[in-house]
Image (cartoon, rainbow, N blue to C red; front, top):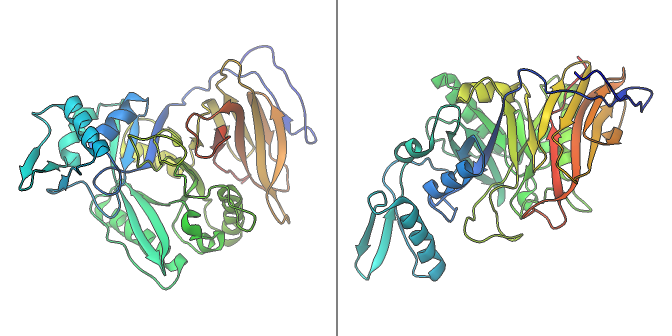
Length: 397
């Protein structure tokens, strides 16, 4: 820590700004846990998708196609439209004729065999540099309402389960992931996808769940309604309500993920679901499924749409953050929490700057930090969005 400290107080002396050096032992890995390819409803080949993420500074990715794993033989037609022909030509140009398997059928139909994960992962994976997690988006519904959950590091295909309510559909599919984890001994976890997609999942539905620790507080798909509307909650307010209920029920806290849920890799803009909108930063000992999942289950990560942290320290006494400063960018750190006896969460303290610490008050139930910048988000989820980040909630005991 630097010798000179700038200390300011706010909220009865419980918020402090300090000049801090990097905290030892923090080892951050950038990853996206929700994305798609031509194995389901994405519009590009899985190698092209992985190539983008690795080239853009990600260390791990879960390619989570709907109700399928990338295994077995699958051929797809290349439609006779210019854009689809160009996607194929780009794939062929990048990976070469010796790698790409294609064939012509009667009527001059061009087909391409999709490479399996086991085939292509060797092109990208490197120890401590890049890891691909076998994943699946378990895609179910209830009376037409979409109910989607991701399974990260899944070992075998999980067929979607039904139920007698939205909550029961979620619970049954959560149970399927946890059952596979117990049976295989392999680390894996479910997370709830885009609850406001189709306005399908309410906070009250998630309050009923057991064994679920993660949901998407931010999803980059343009149709997921992250911010709610005049009659329905946004995902951040959902998050706090869920955790208030979980604490009353004696359950562990729910953690919030940012993902991009990318489907579109050729066209870009607000009407497309593109890569690079949201991700997680995980503080883990090494780049392995076991380490990443253990750290995430301990809440040792944050979610981001652009802001990077130099340090993040949270415990039962305080929460402190240090943002990596970009020249010319202004930042605001908001500590959001819930008071004992309170009816809703609130901003307990806020400051303009890159460093802050909040010390728990006796009547705090939980606290998290929301980090906001004035830097416009490139290719945003919603017009006018700026880069943000969210730390995970922590309790004082």
